[in-house]
Image 1 (cartoon, rainbow, N blue to C red):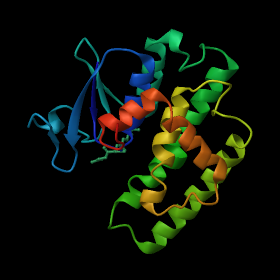
Image 2 (image 1 turned 90 degrees about the vertical axis):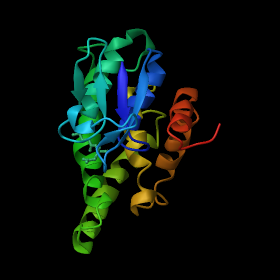
Image 3 (image 1 turned 120 degrees about the vertical axis):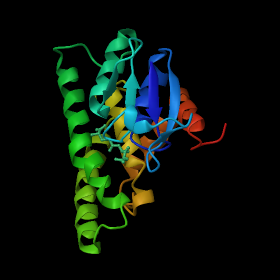
Length: 204
Ligand SMILES: N[C@@H](CCC(=O)N[C@@H](CS)C(=O)NCC(=O)O)C(=O)O
């Protein structure tokens, strides 16, 4: 598999899941602003929508949408426990968290807080909304190590990726100690660390 990514973007979630899965993969770094892949090729030819992540499968087909890609990676490595068995209550919970993170957090941060054109009034409202959603995560994680059950899942890879944007986007995590501890817990995982180092977000 080949992952088209940009450092610290939402593609980090899929990158983490791939490293956690133990599956073989390669990385292709993308400059989304310039629509260029690191080899100089046109990224619009890879994804006409212009965004990462894109996951290219061994058969050459290309796929998008973080939540779907995470499910694919989890299913491709069933022994790693990144995605609970189909039909189980825990699978249902992981799917709920993936959807919640995608629609309530990811798409609140991006594009609203990452574009200088966003009006201050909109920015304030979006930040307040994100803070309310982070408050829900804080309450949930105050009594458990991971979003679902006793194991790290693809939902944690996604939550980590998006919640860590908070301080960069002016959303303080100071009021969320359980979330801060959660970020540190996720970051201490060797596969997560390796993904951060590979993206230039942490040092060896
Ligand atoms: N619906 C897509 C959105 C992906 C997305 O928002 N990607 C952002 C980075 S987090 C991006 O590449 N933005 C650049 C652009 O849209 O030009 C998904 O869920 O995967």
